Length: 460
Image (cartoon, rainbow, N blue to C red; front, side, top):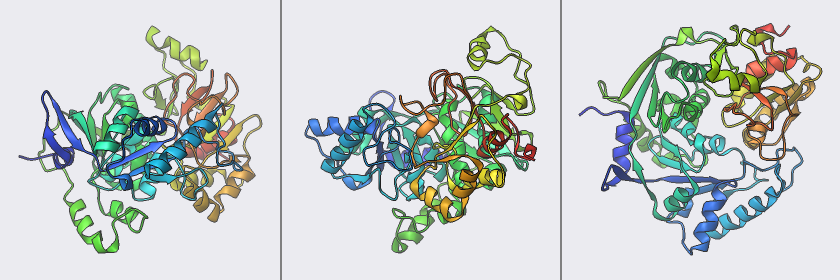
């Protein structure tokens, strides 16, 4: 029987079928962070349990850690957040798992450093108490977000009970136009099929446009799958995947590299494999896309107007301070943010720096960049990218989730209109009454310079 890539990974990790419709799935890696992972670690220790494979459990500090460049080991951007950080640190040490601490050179956002360090690899099953774990399916892995209780269970037993999700294939034919990014593609897909369009599905992205994406761009595309209501997303590994992982700290060693890559090459969907849903996207129809509402599905091409809609969307328009018919590209902004697990990798910063070079942020705009990891930060500084950002008027932060979500500390002023490279534009996501428009890093950079939402080519 022909199988999908997801079928193959599922079968390879199925320990046994359970009563009802669940399977017991073996878990290869567990990743934690201080916001939700600390709950799992503390519960585990209080119960007197120990990790089954501590060498396969990882913990970083990313969600509430301060992103100020001069932060200390316990600095937090949320009131009393230091308590979470210190408790997580001590619990991780006591459990004997891998800890990537606040001041470590490899610290960063979990979904950025997991591929960056080679912790996620094709064919592995990885879970994390964080919804954007779906990002890591970009490397051909079985990766999904779980709760803290399931994380504790996976740490102790190496397994989880899971109901196999339905499967959806989204084939993206043709080539993306110049200036159209993986972020635009992700928003286009969600806009087209709706925020619930992939409800609990395992989505496999494939096709000419996906093959042409870099690994970092694939991470962006898969990152947004949870905004599409998917269980996870996955992309078959290829030579780009192997090249990306070669030599990374937790990647297979030279002695095992040949066997690993031979195995990875077999991780493909068979021809004529069956999916529950199949969609086709014409890549040439995708245009630079910006959200106008309070859901990633409430998006439109930048050159379009805010839709004139029915009462169902009145709440979103009221929150965003918009009326149907307004030109998206003419909206004045108060803030610009580049960061998050969606778009804070080195390629994202390079794209933004290309726009910002020799430019200044518009008067009245607060502009902030927070690299996704300290490795990304150092690489950007080695290329002079930090200087371009700073000279333009951006704040240059230390790695963390920062303004991607409001944690009770850092935020923009109430009522601010912010263009952001993040993944969620929900009410209050970036702070009380903050109005978030999602876009690619290049569009964020251009908008920061012009003071209105605009395309990079509009920067004079």
